[in-house]
Figure 1 (cartoon, rainbow, N blue to C red):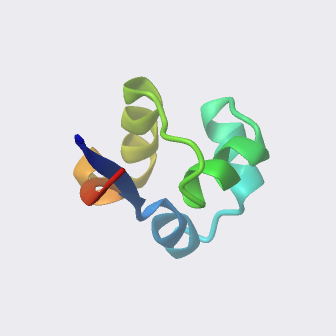
Figure 2: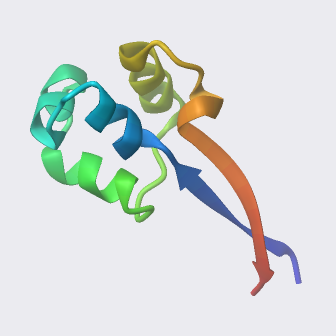
Length: 74
């Protein structure tokens, strides 16, 4: 079996440090609040373009927001 990979997300931490609500962030990138919520909970992996937009908003690299974690085999 191939290893399973999970994406760890620091988006919520950066958003809170910037004193932004999920809705504030969603409005800035043209997404819904539900999309931001799903990304923060690890239920949705953003596209490369969306990840780059989010990183630019916070002035960090994509790697500061998201990291690939190798999980257990499925």
